[in-house]
Length: 407
Image 1 (tube, rainbow, N blue to C red):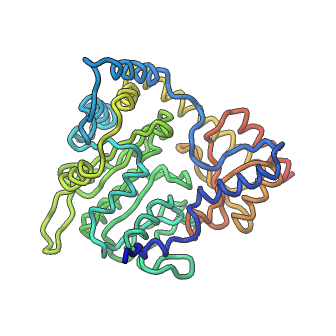
Image 2 (tube, helix red, strand yellow):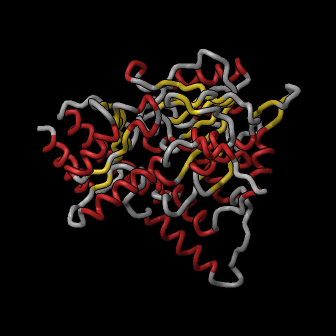
Image 3 (cartoon, one colour):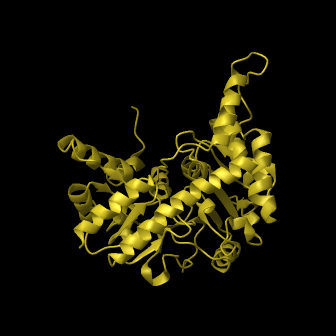
């Protein structure tokens, strides 16, 4: 008798963004003449940078000729891309990360989901609340979270992110083994200082814990006052794995390219308490279950680091930050309290009442899609997330429509 993985039955309702899509689709079916503006899911809307397109085309032409055709590439990524990442994203900021520490993949979402396979089923995990749902749901699937009770899983240590701590969670009061962090944060847009991040690194050392650090939105940080990588903190190479992505920096959401950094010094422990290094383990998992990102996509990603690519991606992220600034200004003028939008494409808005009811009101009365905060966790209730990923004209019109509701 074939049996199911019973842990899947512990997953709560539908995946957040699937539920949003369902409600929007239902609204559009019954209101076909209404123009819906989507400021919900974090999908970019502008074209790939020209430097990336040129590299993409050239690589496709190479694939069209026998003498330059490429089949399977290295699962970890081509050297030209891993070296470009190490040089530009780390060495340029005096951060000691080597190409062999870098694993190219088809998305940070996949990697943050798959990385938990390296760790024991009884690993005690700490997850911020609110949080990107993938962190929680993949651990539910693995049987690590316990039972669902009163809006939370019994075996998860939740790190509350609230107005009282400016949406930057405090260190756990109890010992945990695996810590998920994301800065600039999705969904709140909150940022963390060097000192705050150093405290997490110290906690990981003191408790023999490991940090999974999602830095997919680091490209939106402006200035040098905030860390763009956890490896800017002394000692982090031993206690942290970092996830980065080309999706939000260069518009690769539909092209799929990202990378995970597992330094050779990064460690965990076996059942005897002996140190085991995670780079080799992740390399084995990666090469066993993944055949690599396509050659043309990796060439396009490498073009991000050309002089033209750097300028064009900066213009791209500046554009979305311009949208975010507009949203911050208009929503603040309406009297809403908010965070995010300064070093992040997300604005986290405090509201009165139920976040799904607020979502439905904006959809039905203004034809604007946002994301209900409760979909990100218990602490997300009473909030909504607004995404800056759309055209300038769409953002202006969305603000006009929302403003008309609250005049």
